[in-house]
Amino acid sequence: MTENQNAQAPELPKQTEPIKGEVQPQPFCNCWTWHDEKEPGNPDCDCGEEIDMITWRWELPPRRESWVALHDDDKQVIFHPFYSSGTAVIRGNAPMELNRHYYFEVKMLTEPYGTDIMVGIGSEKLNVSEVLYDYRSLLGGTEESYGISYTGAICQNAMVTHDSPGFVKGTLIGVKVDMFQGTLEFFLNREPHGIVVTDLRKHQILYPMLSSTTAQSSLRLTYASSWDESLMVNAARVLAASAPYYDEEGDEEEEEDEMGFLRDVPPGLAKILRMQFWMVLPTMGHQKPEMDAAKSELLPAAIRRKHWHRRW
Image: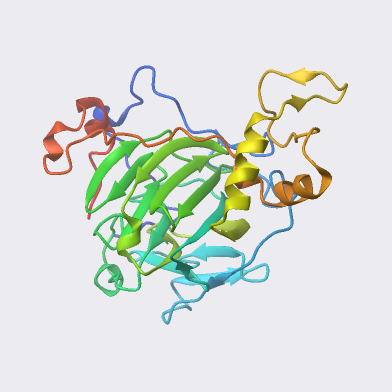
């Protein structure tokens, strides 16, 4: 059985229907007719991509021809360009090293479906060969990787530890990695979903990663940057967080607008923080796992039903 794009999707059982009151995934902008799976949306949409900052690219794996294709200067990934017969993974060509801060964003260009499409990070020890001909939720399947699924599951060590709205065609997925404190935080359309991992320092090196079981699924790297841990960075974040935001008429806004900036910040610092906007993205802080790490049966029943299909 393959996860071909043209294959008719099986009818989902009742337990996978949206949970009452659950926040549904959304695209970043209105360029995407995300509610209609037959519509391709607008792959030329550059909303949220105004800042030209990409310090690394995706790197083709050895089995590249039928599993992964790269386009647009190695920023756009197309998984299973012909048909799918398992799980494909790709990683960035630059490692994430201790004592630096990293942030990258990808945009989902196709409607996700099938076993899984995941965004996250992983170590060199991650074994990808065993899933080549099987459909798996790869990132977060072992202690060597961490990932967020299009279904909303945030995974590590073969467990769903947190839930989120997930992502659809047109969603911006952000990954913030603090290799000084050892923390990982995911963002959806630049909205925070909490610090979900706190022990990344056990890895000397990690890599940005994507995985997919879905034929002709595609994501594009839209932003990637890093910064050394320093007192200047910490001071800049405190200063930026305390300064008011203004609308176009000059009035103070009660809330941050999506790309608004700080009029009261010195020009030199303002320029840095415009390019490194992720430094001042709001955070929800450390989020307590929604399940006991040793007892998966304690995962709330509604969330357990939502992620019933997950395969490690």
